[in-house]
Image 1 (tube, rainbow, N blue to C red):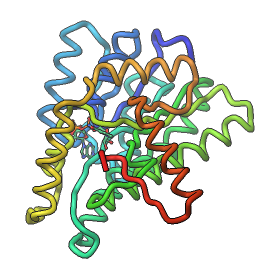
Image 2 (cartoon, protein in one colour):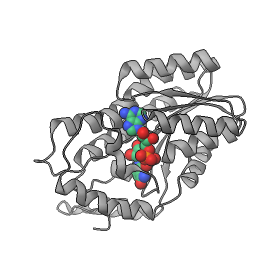
Image 3 (cartoon, rainbow, N blue to C red):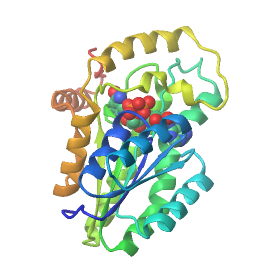
Image 4 (cartoon, rainbow, N blue to C red):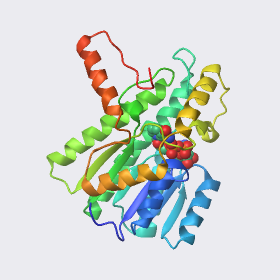
Length: 275
Ligand SMILES: NC(=O)c1ccc[n+]([C@@H]2O[C@H](COP(=O)([O-])OP(=O)(O)OC[C@H]3O[C@@H](n4cnc5c(N)ncnc54)[C@H](O)[C@@H]3O)[C@@H](O)[C@H]2O)c1
């Protein structure tokens, strides 16, 4: 998709971090943008800021793990702007815990926000993008969707799922020679509030030592990460150039090579996070 001016984008998890940066970048490209997020205060602040800069944007409070909420998001988008061209399924959360520590509620929360949201988003918005004639779907996975790390099982499972879903979607779009494209965003560390994910958890879950350890390790890594704005730049480039893979950190390619070498060896497991 090379024409952005006047087109309509929907971004989830748009009140913070990567989502806020892509929503801002799409608006700066002249798009009308719908920002969706569960965190009402920061969503309102983001929308007011963008409107203050003269951008045509709408905020829709949305819990992306709920089918009805995604339907409502689509309805509100069509009501306000009449069409949808670009969807960035981006909202995400993380919870750490060893396999035997994780509760079913931990799994359900992370898979709901990180994977079911993308299934709902693609199922809902793909037909609407088809009606618009041209567009693009970007799904945020993670480097954890290409290579697992210990203690974040639900996150790894969800993000591998997002990569699989996105690849499947792109294969299908290519097979039909569609004017719609798909990309999967696999960031390494980006300086956002991801390690404070539990601020948006609907059910209170007791903290655990593993979760605390992960938070302190990951907060440092994330704090030293890329700026969300530079990731947004890569997203816009991928949409324009119809590039599928958005791997924000070039050194991940080496980790992936080692992963494949480990497969050849048959016994070797390779860890991405410095291990
Ligand atoms: N920051 C990183 O290092 C990093 C690395 C790889 C992947 N990611 C992925 O990037 C995406 C964006 O995260 P971020 O790093 O910008 O973190 P962030 O916490 O700054 O932003 C995530 C946004 O998602 C929203 N959100 C959480 N639960 C929601 C729900 N149920 N419904 C709607 N919105 C909800 C939050 O309110 C927040 O605004 C996530 O999918 C995350 O997994 C981040």
